[in-house]
Image (cartoon, rainbow, N blue to C red; front, top):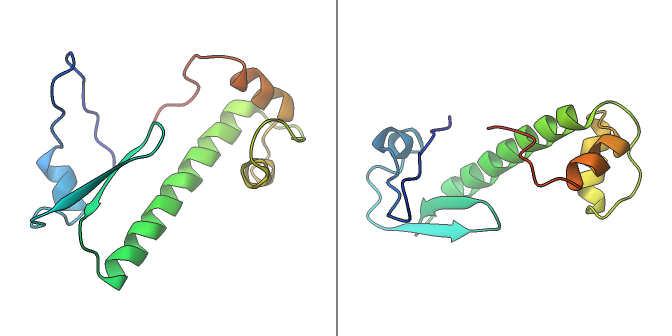
Length: 115
């Protein structure tokens, strides 16, 4: 599930309570915020093995959603190597993405997908 958080200036961002509840983080005393290039992930500061596996698979689900949407935005032709990691190209190619569409998308600063 996703939530839209509008930004108003440079003030603090509040995470919606329902998001914390859905993520089962509402009772966590300490949270860890990870900033990873255009992504912010909030995790419990201390994870059980089960929680670590759940976090990992949740991030994989998000990765699959992003790759699917990017592949849709690229089109349906073959992808060859470009300045993109090989594993990302493999995933996009398996989704039927177009190399030429990807090149066009990489050459623009305009948003190409919405989450």
